[in-house]
Length: 308
View: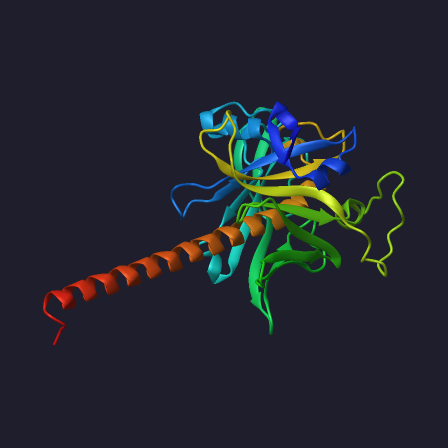
């Protein structure tokens, strides 16, 4: 598997398909997913490895706010039980005092000089059971409340597949590597997603055509498990996304809207893979316990000459 330089000079694993799509003026943003030891505590997604490392070293609530938003989580995700079908995602937003507050429901986490840190309702995801499958359906808060259907679907066939749509535009996670539950590569059309959430077209992009949503997809990022960095305390899962060359900051203020938007699909992928791994481990333990009980019973019966 190839390696690339990412933001903060940290090495990021990238599949060969992503390698071919990286242009000279593109960045690769590496975003650690930090899961607390306490299950009832939130799961955090950070804007960069450096930002996560600073957060692990010192609490932003006790320090002066960094003007770039370094050392602050980008997303905070809460769920009591992933299988019960509800996940809420809040976004940390750093604004100047003179800026208007966010449009979505929010709480002020900290005010420091000319900066205010808000925790803003970003989206909620609900598990919906359909006739032949289950899907997570996401409802966004303002300013993304105009987004139509945004879902995450899992197809548990001979080899599990994960995919979905954003207002009809395809999002598809394809496996790469030989390790079970290893890397997943996100395929999407960046121009379509950018127009969907910003109403703006990128330079040299084709006009939006809602009747032609099945256009070719290209690699936009990856999900990887058990990823290690010398800057972080422990290994973690991570999301990594290709971004335009001007998106070079490490803090939460520099994350492009498309990266934020696609990160939600990555977070749902992470939670679902973790739940599947836990279910596999539970079944394996049950099988071992059953085998052990059977062996013990057989030995006990044999010691009495064949039982009752």
